[in-house]
Image 1 (cartoon, helix red, strand yellow):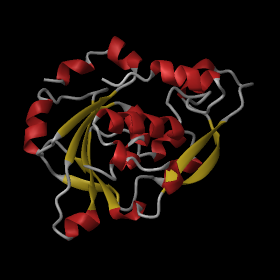
Image 2 (cartoon, rainbow, N blue to C red; image 1 turned 135 degrees about the vertical axis):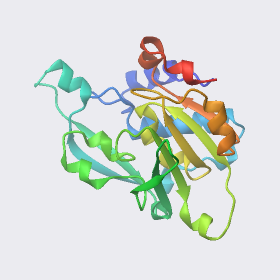
Image 3 (cartoon, rainbow, N blue to C red; image 1 turned 90 degrees about the horizontal axis):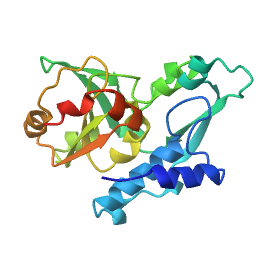
Length: 216
């Protein structure tokens, strides 16, 4: 496992913008730091993308779920950061249904722009919550190139982390929260020929839900 709690606390205490004030998610910078930690744990540190490879697009006036629940109107809004790369357009995000039918959720890149003008701006990452998504490099697929596959069992924290991981893997994402009926993730891993499995889930969900019962 990759333990990030102490590292993120130290960064937050030092004034780094790794968590939103009005939302329970980490910022995109926080997601990037989590990505680097995961890659290092896999011995892939030589493949880690530099932060300089991305252009940061700032979206102001973001009020997240913490603000909505607390009702503290005096708290200033956050700024949602979208880290964009020149090759974002080569990726496609598909929703996979139980009958294995698929539909395109995002044709180009990882961001659903429609959310950026709404209250739930975090939903821009991968078009919000879906039960199962498959993210592929369509240019590599068109060339017949085979990429390693990652099974990502996750909650919404992983959504802003996927644009980094997708440079290295085609990703099958399975939602561990909500109305999910996947009883055997190991079978999905075998079906989709996933060589690695990553669980990304915030501690509250791990403690208060039975989501880990799916991990067998």
